[in-house]
Image (cartoon, rainbow, N blue to C red; front, side, top):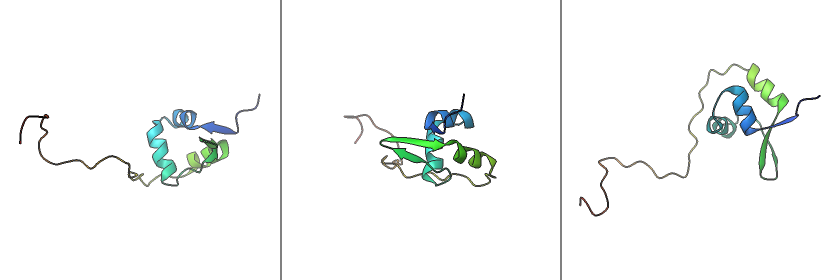
Length: 82
């Protein structure tokens, strides 16, 4: 039986022993090319094999998310504090 040509993010992350979020950072950084089919993001087996053969001396930088920036200082409960 032939193996799949396209793989899901979940199966690729499991193959690389990393979490899906780390895989998404690699994809956003352009380290791993993807194929989009509708709303699905798929990785070709060839792209995965090429990625695994490369030297990975660079680190993946954090991709900016929609989170609000952290506030410095102490946390206060509503109705308490200032």
